[in-house]
Every structure is written in structure tokens, then in C-alpha cells.
Amino acid sequence: MEERLKEQFDGLLEKYTELMLGETAPEYKEKIQMWALYTFISKSMPPLVKHWNSEYPEGKEKIMKIIKEIKKLNDLHREVNGKKPGK
Image 1 (cartoon, rainbow, N blue to C red):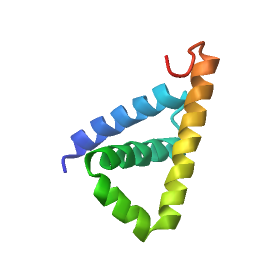
Image 2: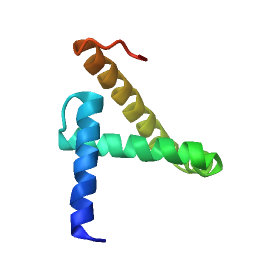
Image 3: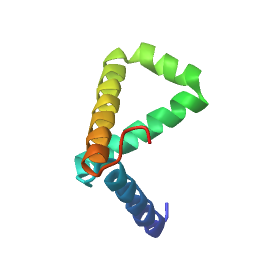
């Protein structure tokens, strides 16, 4: 894959992470990437995610923890910046 595109896409992911959580730590970027991809796949191919969840219950549990952490961090970020969650 083209290196320039990778860099540009990384910038997009970094900005998205910043807007979602208020910071761009590499750990958060990785969690946002996993959350976004898992969410997309679960909506576009639910049977695939259902199969994966049954094959890797420990993976599903870890993804659910990441999803909850992102929601909590996003809610906190919105609260600190004067935006109510869900608005």
C-alpha cells in the first residue's frame, strides 16, 4: 500500500481519536481503530461477528471492555467540554 496514503489515513485516525477522547495517545488510537472496525463489521456482517464471538469469547469480552472504556472516555470528554452525551 502507498506510504503517503497510510500516513494520511493515520492522520485521520489520530484526529478522530482526539475528537472522540480529547487526546491521541497511541493506545487510544489503537482502541478507537479496533472499536470502529468491530462496530462496522458487526453492523455490516452480523453473522461473521456472531461466529467470531463464539469462537473467541475471551476476545469478545476484551472488545466489550474497550467499547465501554471508549464510551466512558467519550462521555467524560464531552462533559468536560460542555457537551452533554448524546447531543
